[in-house]
Image (tube, rainbow over all chains, first blue to last red; front, top):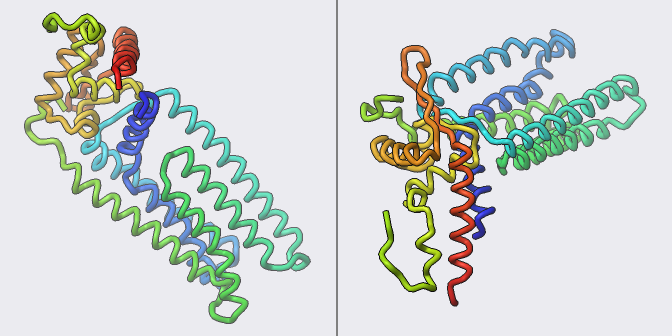
Length: 211
Length: 108
């Protein structure tokens, strides 16, 4: 192993030790849970409000995650500031995610403007591709391979959902089933990683007076 | 620590920085080299050293001028941030270069 490779590995380990606590998986799972639950609410609340109603829920989850990270994770894992290489990677990821979100927004606008004139399965294909692209970029720049799996699941969710719906096996384009399973996997994986972090990193004991 | 007289062919080993050469300190310096700064707990988690062990090695690195330790209070709790100095960064690079050279020069 060359010196360069081992330094890269050391940096990667440092980054994952600090950031891989499973809490982002839980947040992402809660976000994509909306795709599973919102279709049921849309009949009574309308398409727009059935999605907006999730904002306070996400806000609460996000706030909880920030507090858990501050009072539970940081005392166990410690604090670190990353070097320029990592900062550059995170900046590149931000740029890619901005582009991906812009693409998703454009897709939404096009879907609204062309409603009824384009075959229904076209939008799920593009939505899935956008999600796959975003998660693949995150997996690459964050050195977290499981995000590729999430991207793949999110790519398949609208496609399989649409197929289930067209075959008559599911309602609401199959989203409650496919996105429900995907979101559930994310939340469970996140919770398992978080529990393992608690198990493997007990609070520093009495022998650490200065920390 | 001075090395005993050795075969001239192995002379480059005598130039290896002994402050860095101890495995625990090398591990600490490697992690500090790839981040901007870290605290005690983070270094303990990464290296697997106990607080006492880590403290001893950090003191040696501090005495050599390779790291700085900034003590502050967060709330009522003391908190120490450790970072590599420019001298420490240069010494680490030099150590890496020397070791690579020594190992490359060894016969198969």
